[in-house]
Length: 113
Figure 1 (cartoon, rainbow, N blue to C red):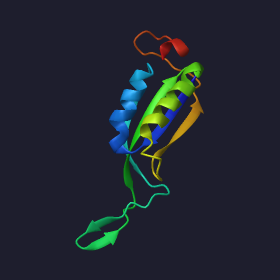
Figure 2 (cartoon, rainbow, N blue to C red; figure 1 turned 90 degrees about the horizontal axis):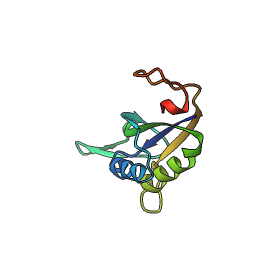
Figure 3 (cartoon, helix red, strand yellow; figure 1 turned 60 degrees about the vertical axis):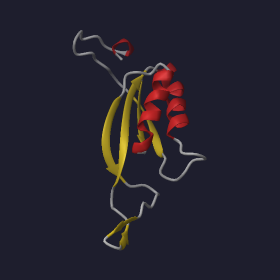
C-alpha cells in the first residue's frame, strides 16, 4: 500500500478530479494548503509589486494498493500540467503506507482502502 500526496494548482483541481475518476480512482482527500516552491508569483498591491510568502495550493491524499500507484500518478500528471508545463505545476510524493483500518468494520490492509 502507498500514500500518494499531490500538490497542485487550485485551477487544476476539477481536471485532476475528473482524470482520477476516469481512471477509476474515486477515494481522495482534498485540502487547501499554502506553500512556496520555485515559482515567483508576483502580485500588484496599491501600485507596488511584491512576491507573497505563501501561495495557495491544493493537496490531494490518495491511499492505494501498489498496482494502482502508476495509474494514479499518470492521471494526476496528465491533468495537473498546464499547456507544455510550467514552474509551479506541482509535485507528487509517494510514501509507504504501513496500515489502513476501516473504522466502520475494523477491516485492515488493502481491502480497507
